[in-house]
Image 1 (cartoon, rainbow, N blue to C red):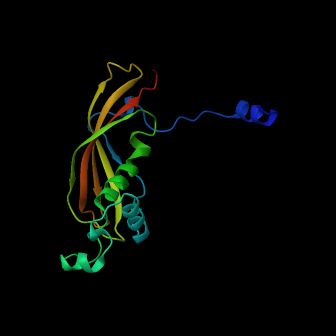
Image 2: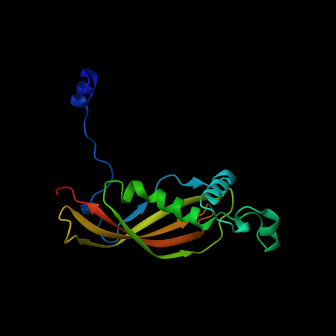
Image 3: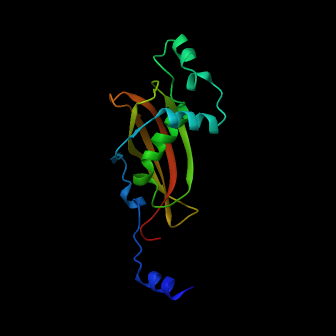
Length: 164
């Protein structure tokens, strides 16, 4: 390590990010920040990279022939975007992701729609196998710019305790 690196490390202050298990009281609601507008580029890149060959996500005449006003956003991009909006509040503090249950796609999402998210703590318990963690489940809801609910799911993580 160079002298400059050692000096930098000596001056650095650890800043903990995210909420901890103790912050996750049942019924607590997190209104997640900002939102995200889905562009045509987002949809095309995601759909191509995930080898999704459903023409609803890249062929406008096809989508219109089925009664849609334009190309649909790939639902897995909708899921990943809404999930991603929740990370800062729910799991950024550390702890393994344990899974998603009861995922429902409720409304179509189109290019140019802006997604926002809200999560509610629906369950929590101390981890028996990981003493420095608790297990938390949230109900996450995603909305478009008109406040129409487009997706919801339950997500579970191990969440680090403050003292552990």
